[in-house]
Amino acid sequence: MTILTLDALRAAYSLPQEGGKALGDAAIAEQLSVLPAWSYTDGAIRREYKFNDYYETIAFVNAIAWIIHREDHHPDLTVSYNRVGVAFNTHSVNGISINDFIAAAKLDMVFDR
Ligand SMILES: C[C@H](O)[C@H](O)[C@H]1CNC2=NC(N)=NC(=O)C2=N1
Image 1 (spheres, protein in one colour):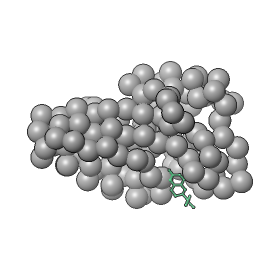
Image 2: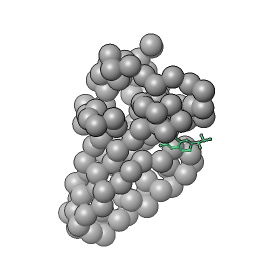
Image 3: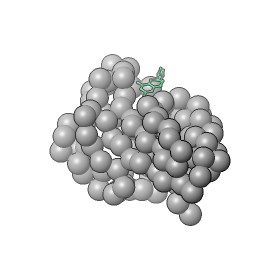
């Protein structure tokens, strides 16, 4: 598999993966190297974002909703007072696809300046 750069992930759009194949562990590890805040555990790529208060936390959740609706690719979220846990996998391949990395790169882009 070709590893996409962070810029390439940011510029890409999720595509339907129905009928596609999940990425293998080696490809997942290589693609994760451009997203160092993310890890691959329990069948998903995951990151925790931290905030100062609940208002910021929910504002970020709303930003996620906007981005993710545009990508048509939906994470599991764990929302608490000052943290948002995000987990992506691709149901349609029963594993990880490039869409998970594209969506992760876009969330990081709005979180970090
Ligand atoms: C057709 C469309 O691409 C699919 O229904 C999308 C919608 N959002 C999705 N989100 C996630 N996390 N996995 C999927 O396989 C998925 N499939």
